[in-house]
Image 1 (cartoon, rainbow, N blue to C red):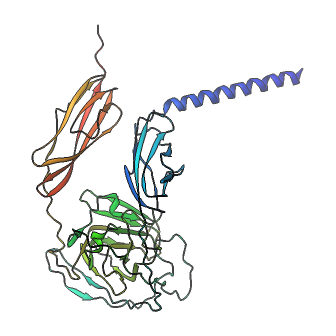
Image 2 (spheres, rainbow, N blue to C red):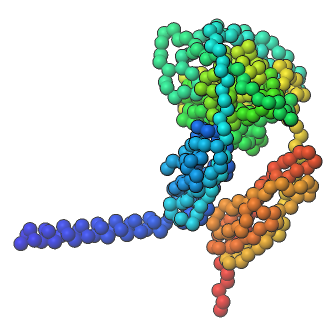
Length: 460
């Protein structure tokens, strides 16, 4: 009798738990908003055969919706894509990657992939001796003064570790550490001389995600500042951040002879490295990872609360005779409690070995006055409104609308004129980013408006 009662009680408890589990799952699934829009980190990816690139979901709309997606390539012979979004270039041609939300099959995004032929590497005779590194002249300038170049003394101290920057392996501790061996660079690949070469001075746009590559996300964080500068916080030894120029004939034939770094920093001195061959914007390594990369272990990037400019000229090691990349790395044993922080104000590549402050001044950008015409501040649910972007001067070259929040939707995100539709009560922010051409220069500006959506009044 007792056993029968116990069995019935057990079955009742099991059923209650199953009901609770199902009910709990139902509540959770109802709480998660449905994914309506997917924005990827890239709309177009250009790769050489054999190269890879990882796609990531930048954001979704609504913001709290699931970012879980699937990837599919329409031409797997040209480019494949893994479950984690890693594209691999297989063959010259074009392919399209379709990204679909796992929670809403109607929410999709597409990424166009262009695969180009890999550059042929020239046959280079073996080099048995490593070229001598000339001391790097350093320029320390105060604002409004002409930089004076002095020869930096050769560092006599041995580096703290034999590991190389940009690697994840922890360097072994030894009593007498030796500096790492740097591979002998190979000559710059030869191109046909282009009709138009790169400008004599190249100012890196630090606001662009493509201007830098963080080699050590777990050991360095990058923050963009409102003034266009970047603040890098190093928390681990050998963490590194790279600034590259594009891999094309225009850059090769520009023959940049120096790169200038303007910064403020605190917490410790940092090292730097120069690149001269086979470097691509977006994070590929130079050659096989070391060829064309020339680190300086002298910690020339000295901590300074005052703004400072250093000029690093081409060395005898640079086989290509030109500089196309700069790396800043942390050779110190650092922790999150005792980080090294550097705010990079400007990075400028120059065809001069000794550029002046006038050479390093950025070009004056045209002023763009963007307005969103006919934009309402309030709307009722189901109401629509035409909105148009306008500029006082210049010609609009591109338009990009974005909606923050799920109170409104937008008809076309790339049109000068579009339509807003209020779908639910709440607040939404409408932003438009416009690229305008004024004369022979272009400038990009963003304008944002806030819209409050209200439920329509009930009829009596």
